[in-house]
Image (tube, rainbow, N blue to C red; front, side):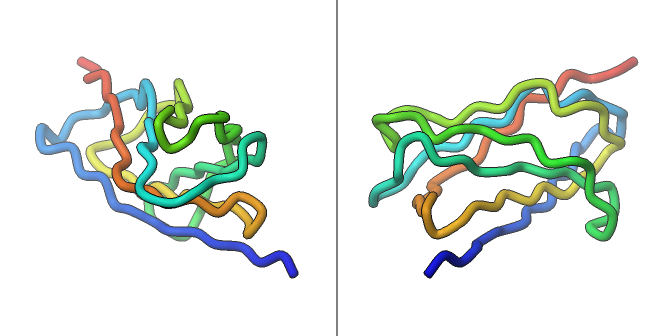
Length: 104
């Protein structure tokens, strides 16, 4: 049986300025992951309306290697991220890092 999983996290940028999401990196925790499977990352301004998902393959060697997705677009001072996958792409996530670029 295949089932889906997801989690959401809220990101607030303290300077209250618009920013570009240059990259998101997912660091693995203890456990296993199936190399070659995909996960999806979506972003939302309000947690109700989501953009098109961006997909990333789980690299062989995860969790030692990170999952990276680059250039996710523009955001206001806050956004909601949703990470999802299937039971074929089970993984343990220890940390998610976002790299912003401030727009002036």
